[in-house]
Image (tube, rainbow, N blue to C red; front, side, top):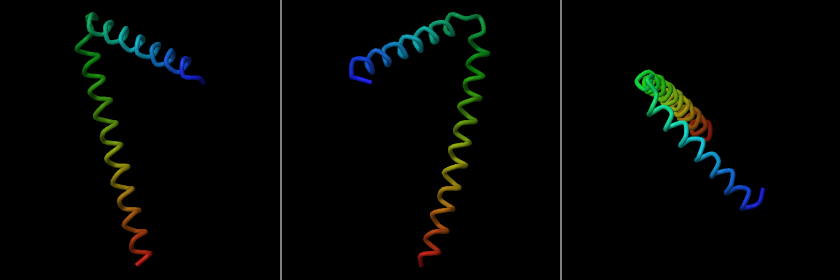
Length: 67
């Protein structure tokens, strides 16, 4: 993809995200959406922390094997 196509893609993605944020902000279900988004963010953070911990364990195992 050339630079112009890439820029247009990012512009379209930005416009879609902006429209989605505007819709949620104007929605009657804004509080429910925010709770759902916060819940999703918490799950993702937990998964990242778990994966990072497992990665550290593997690195420690490799260090032990090398020593």
